[in-house]
Length: 368
Image 1 (tube, rainbow, N blue to C red):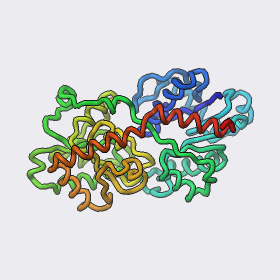
Image 2: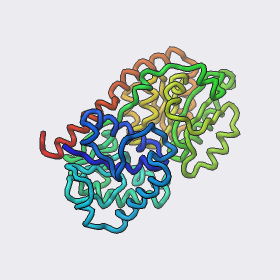
Image 3: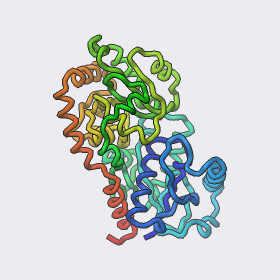
Image 4: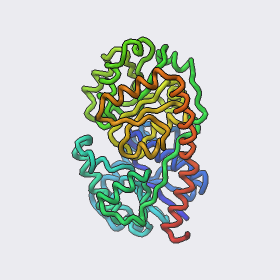
């Protein structure tokens, strides 16, 4: 079995999808061998993961993005013959893949249909085009959660038999993570803190978190800071201004991948009131690191946390504020949630994800 994976998201600034592709490809290659898992467009070995930069360098990135643009806008049947020799082409951004191999793709979320106001119009149009050209004619689709699977089947009318759930994984570094005094000192963190991690964009609902943090009792402000880490995203100017000028709030910006496990493990609470997640990497990573989680009761987050988190209505300031007060004032509650969270996180291993993905590919090829 030979698989070619469209790895274009590794060439751009990205968070969740880039994270997924990097670890997923690495594990598939470890299990199948590098020669059986090739990458489009003409990418070889994977360097370290950096969400902010391309893995191919400036010139290599420009050339590959030019190829992607040409293939997406001017379909050319010659691509069927000069494209990769493979049994399966798993596409992420290419809407005119070679027609000879079987076509598969990954369904991450349906936010462009359910919450289009939280995306740029061009991104919504591109995602809907991708759904018509790829998802609706694929031989098989991987959904990253049962919630995403159900949403996609309901909204797009997909054949349920071809959509299979394969959960993401969590890097081993989060399972092994311990709090680091040196790392906290590096970022100027001298007090216990609640942590929020992710791209600063409207869907992450940070303004509600900032409102609730402001309204906490003075006794909690005397003990805890709110630490927010992640790159600036779309429509973030208002939220960024609040992050930089709110008392008791520390904004760290984008953090290198190697620093995330220890920074997460050092948190007293991880709080993530997102309005929709296809999977929710930061939540799964926090559970793996033994940090109690407060998150939303919507989309995939109840599924991923599996009863191991404090769930709140992300539209309710009172619910989020009460959950923060309850956990920050109760070490016993935090310890109990941390324990069950670690157990739940064991479901999300990259090796498991890769093995289940191989079973999916074999099923698409009719071998199982």
